[in-house]
Length: 403
Image (cartoon, rainbow, N blue to C red; front, side, top):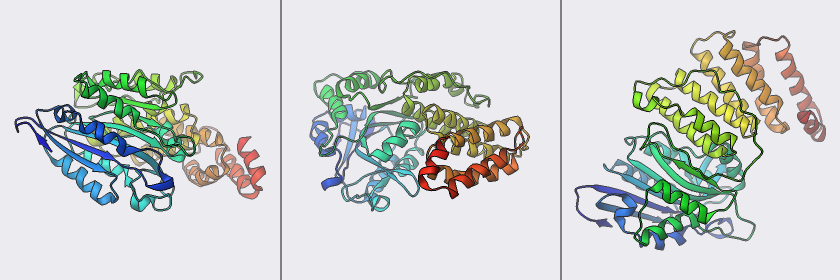
């Protein structure tokens, strides 16, 4: 549908997707009639409006083609996505489930989230808005709580992610419906304000709300809404790498770290991780893979995973940061390299899952052999614990992992 003249054309892509049958967690398409009643100019924020609707799509390639076509059109782009997210266990990648998706066919019938990210990152910063109202399957929910939902620098993101509903219940996209109901009433407040109103109405208390807007101020804003209060943790030391220094002084003039770590200490781990992932994407785009700036944000994400009580992910990220520094020809006795490996080692020791400890152990041993650290015996300590985990029966291995 095209509305208005062509002087200021924008595009809105509405995606409502969920598996049919027992695998359905949310009645995604129920929001489409409400959105269809919203004036197109409000959905796009422009005078002329092109609306593309995908209701219960079945083929990921078809969805990708529609996203690619919408992303290629000049002018503002708004995506409204409702559905459910799942985790591919082989590659641990988030997918949006489609109508034919089942747990065993996810990799072939779902839309990989990184496909969407890849198309949107080609657009000019500040021209793209993504509004989500999605349910996460149990495995995806655990990852999203600590890593957030990344979309990239320069993309305005508002939305809600909820854990899976109780058995035999189907969730409703009440957050997106609340937005649409307000728009239908003729009221069109700033999206940040409307987000807070809709989130307060929609709930639930344990939902993860995202409010990332890098279009209005140099540093991304964070939402005042959050998941239920958790016990406050003592502030963790921020990685010692310097804050990113960019030729884009407008972007760099406000340090985003205080807001990110404030969100993490308040228990809003997904929000903090999403913000850090966005800034890491900016560093990769501006400075490249392996740059000082990209490594800095890798270390920030590692510390955020620690705060979110995800030692496995924190260990992985600290090892990746150490590898990045070594690849830049920093010597093994460089304090920053040693700190990264020491933190990876500490997080590995914190692991209570024997299987994950066995998976990460050989990588840590190899890294420790190259970076033995300031204290002797670090390599032997990792090897000893790893041998115990491999030789002990499952019950005793769990006890050893917890010791």
